[in-house]
Image 1: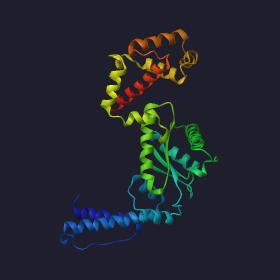
Image 2 (image 1 turned 60 degrees about the vertical axis):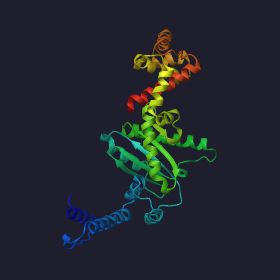
Image 3 (image 1 turned 180 degrees about the vertical axis):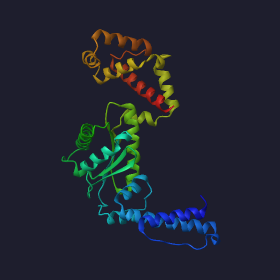
Length: 311
């Protein structure tokens, strides 16, 4: 778009938002630098008006990293009656786009706008909630206690949305952070969602600071992960580990290596489960009835899943 057309579009947007009509003389007399400066100032006016009249736009600017100046953050927070000295957790709620309208309606009823909380749509099917944690916690004490309370609150939210909105949702969370840390927390929420849905798809809630081994694998260079698999498993193990065998192993791990409990969850006879465990041993060289081998295969399976997803 030529420079003069960009100016026209910027002026049109300013007029749409504010009702102000500004005119510019002959743009042919402007240098490229002068025109770029003028365009920047018009857009700055538009952004300032949008932020000062739209609370959601203020949060979006913080979460996206478009608003970083501490003085401006404090000023805009004051305009919107948002306590700037309080830390907040950032919650990401993700659902298929077809459910977006319904989920947004329920989120706004669960998290009504206030000094302590705001809900906004960041993308199709992706929502952000910024919440002062003290408003949802009743316990005071150790970080472990508070973490469990946050998890319980978010799981309750997930269950409510699944039941009332009849929508499959996943939730991730990071923080608490000051207003200036919102962008980093939002990126952590996105990363937690990616890691959580990959490594623990049966869960619906993921805390960035509680991702466990998944975060470590995510941050490990692919070649290092490949080396680990080559050194740990028998040749051909990756191809030999079928989806059925992987599911068997993961359920067995989840049941704390208890044969009867895993067989019940898998809806199979105990002897069938023992046969599959022996298949896994022949394919991988690991006998997962023993803790060390189970631990090794659990890490190997997670690494394989990550590499398949990213390569």
